[in-house]
Length: 353
Ligand SMILES: O=C(O)CCC(=O)C(=O)O
Image (cartoon, rainbow, N blue to C red; front, side):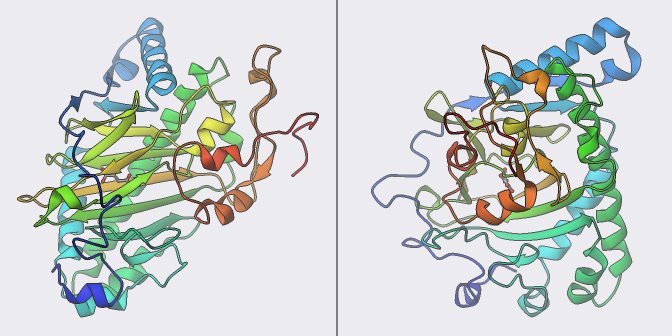
């Protein structure tokens, strides 16, 4: 249940003064254009020949270079499993406030129930969110035991199955995207061979009495490698393209895939990590489920040598994912600011940690 008392527990924002991004401007002023982010049919990978595979690789690479976003259809994740996961997510958000507060995410922590407050806390979101992790260890059963008195296993098994399937897809897409950069498909796999970090944020945006003043999730880029987002059939996701916000047409049978900051850096800036946000509306609640694939914290992130040429010299210095994440939320997570902190300065070699 969405409750005004959450405001006092700092879990969600309050209209009109806390939620808006810019009090002088309507959030939705530029939101009318519906963008059909390229939809790439992955069935060609399983049924077609090498030419079909290459057409998928090229379409994906082109979308990531141009938009940083694409959608995949016939992705191999059972639509019934997606529906089951959505049902469990709604079940979670419909729990009484006391139950959700037992799983509250403390400030500065990554997992649990709350609102995304980020950085300076001046923007609150008209949203409830819940973050969970599958790898390196699953915390899902632990949260299920705090949230539910019964049928805890239904929740944890469904979410673990869903995240496991999405992880498989994310790994396949990473190989296709590596190929799209002209690399052998497995060239980036060493980042995940030993262990990977796989997490999910469930976002529930309730109908909002003043949607034009509110924001569901403020503009940000993802500090991750790859994001695989499922949105239901309610409009809300917007991407900043050509200096304007455009709305991504919901296609519940597809996943929205977007390049995170890490992939932008690993691709030596061929792929773009693009600003996006979620808007809210006055009538329908909206659910999105965002899964994030990442290397382990100890991984050293550096674009492979093959992507460094005289025409495209190395742009970012090497760093560990731990270093990157520990800085990620200290700064306004906006635009290219985060990767820019890792820009090489003149004369640097890029090999120091
Ligand atoms: O709800 C959406 O469509 C966007 C979600 C998102 O960007 C996120 O969870 O990082």
